[in-house]
Image (cartoon, rainbow over all chains, first blue to last red; front, top):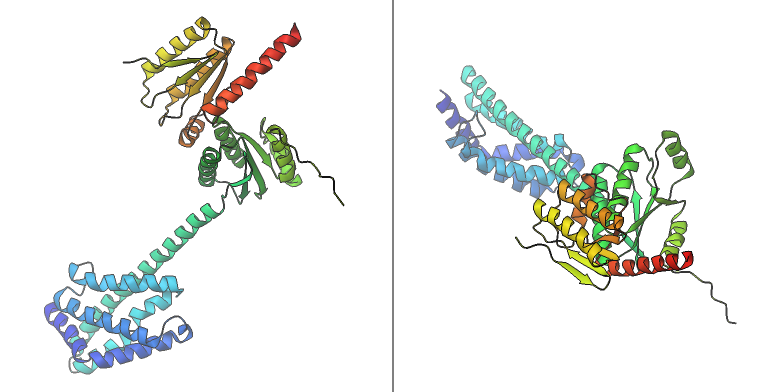
Length: 289
Length: 128
């Protein structure tokens, strides 16, 4: 009986391909009426046609109850592609799943037309088709979710790199403007970039500017001190600057200290100190009229 | 196994720590270094780590010890050429080498030794 069912669904789709495709497209366009800026009708038609053309042979050869079988690989691959492209385009998960779920209505209509003589077979067929389409729909949602997570991970990575620039202020003086919370991963990135820059530029002084760090607790102070100690091992002296009044107060209340590391209020104070350390001075020129 | 060579340059001693450093080599180095500092009346020692790519807790501690021993024998000791990855590893191992002088490379280390030696000479003269 199952074999019978397989051939019937595939057979019905093949015979009614044109009408199913049109109805399906119509359903999709209604559901996606608000998102016509993201995907054109012709594009949608192309995608739908391709899926149907992959769907039929899979129904013919493979089991309808198990989409993990190799016969379904092409269909899943295609859905994979569509889902990830839609995730990138900015579709919502339900809009992406609609692509599969809106196939139900036209397919069920066809099944009813064809099998209205035998109610029992019709119910069986409907059930099989529902389960199959549900599985495919869930699969698209799953892929969609994965693609979104991938985007988030990539953005996090980009942000890590963007948020730790090392700038050369003067010959022998580097500055690291730190922005955001310093967790252990960020500390690691800051340390690596700073130490590499020290090697590349042969700098003696590194200024860590924490103006953009909203809170400094014991852990963040610990991480900063680690960076300072690592830079010291490379023969560089670190200056911590940009400590705001509130932060200084909180740190003292918490008993957090930077030890014997030189701290300054502002970046300009730190730069002035750094100039003195490398025996440089800024002088005011006498104006010549 | 060949001993680690100690280059005697003027009043200074340059120790280039090789890449494949074993525990026994470090122990022997510590011994020969302290002897040479006394014997050659060394004023400054540069421990060059630029070719070292792996440091474990023992070797890290021994490097610190060697610098401290040299300092105790009245010579300046500077550890130079620590690579970024080694620096991070040492910090994670808790080896901050807090009382030991460091410099970026041999060149900077030599300049630092000269300044330190000059300062000492001035101190000595002013105390006379």
